[in-house]
Length: 284
Length: 284
Image 1: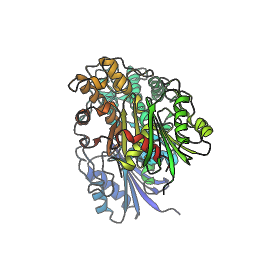
Image 2 (image 1 turned 180 degrees about the vertical axis):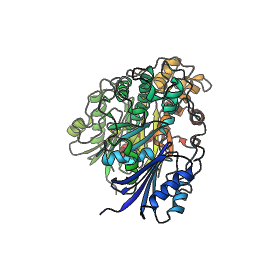
Image 3 (image 1 turned 135 degrees about the horizontal axis):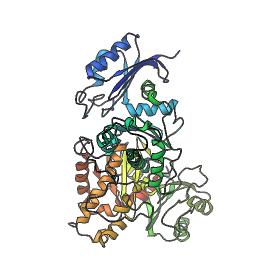
Image 4 (image 1 turned 135 degrees about the vertical axis):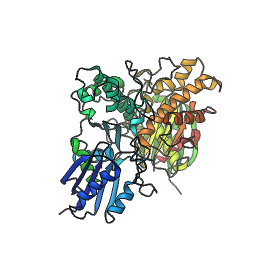
């Protein structure tokens, strides 16, 4: 029998805690809204304690967060617009609350990508980008068989892209204004058009523009990494028809110089479960 | 005594052939202009033959070129504006001409990066980007300890970046017009300003714009890979003061969200020798 491990997916709006195996099998899970650090994590700890001891816990967290195990601020949330979480140390909290439990921490997108690599749409591949588009925009990167961390971890939402010719919106990123996240995240769409993405009808011009911006970001990443596939996850990107629009924009941008993106831009196979499955897989 | 190997750096304008060791020590080298495939490579083969048998040859070639050893078009130059080379198979040519010699092929930029990693400015690092700016713009990528190949190899010159507010130049890329290479390569500068880069004085507005464009490209790459350092190589980038201008632009773009680029954007230590040293190192 496989040993039980814990998993925690810490998102900007929702948190998922689970018990399962390091092979990504979920035995039981609990979803609830993310609030303050103390409240959010105490709920998770109490839920886990009620289910008995675990040797390891995999934490898939929003970023930016220090991932280098031997850094003095390992597991600490860095400069983020979520001010209540800025400077909060997940590592310190869990080491105090669950001193017998080994911590495995990565970003939420890297964990979701890991889920797709082990159990989903990217099985057996060596070069994959997982893009999530929702409250923020982030990327997990698997490059020549390794999850990319670098000096921090990808912060791909903050790259700059050309402006769409019909767009004069100022952008919502507090640091960069009109970076990709500033122009194409869920909050950017809502502020530009006065309606949330899920309320904007399919035929609204918003979707052509959104597809064009996402294509710019994906295209930039591909010129550098040449992945086999790109997975488009997150709330905004689940809009019907968007994936096909982004694919068409990508092929226009490439103009025949690059291989077509048809069938290379795909949806995650694990959907909303990718993050928590990935959190369990971090324990391997 | 170390075994002798051959090295070939095949550039758009010049070619370098050398005899040395797989540790990157050059014993003898010969530089000459790149012309047609047959003429250029026959000069290299004759020069090598006169120096006795070699067990291996490392070839550092301009791209795009197929690098996957087991692909049927391994070592073949793909769609390129250099039409005489398009479809030419380096692997077939060398296997016919030097049938006893093992071929190791990579891009010129990956080889230059390898040189810097083993013997130059990037020793001991795990995440490094080498950007070359000259006739074209290309990148070599070392990510979590591996040279990045992906489905082809980086084609970083072709990403799109925002336009500089004072720039109405149409761009020179035959495929994408105003991608990074189309706006910031040597030929782009010359066509925009009517003078080659080395004739444009230091105080000319061209350099502020060039620095800004290069910063946009580097910044995009860094949001994805978070490298420890970025090496800026190639003819254009050797202009006095340009590295400092690019660094300043990078810090403006990051706006405090990212670690400063001061001392992270560097010059290659091996200069013009990086490519041929890297070609020898490919034989390891």
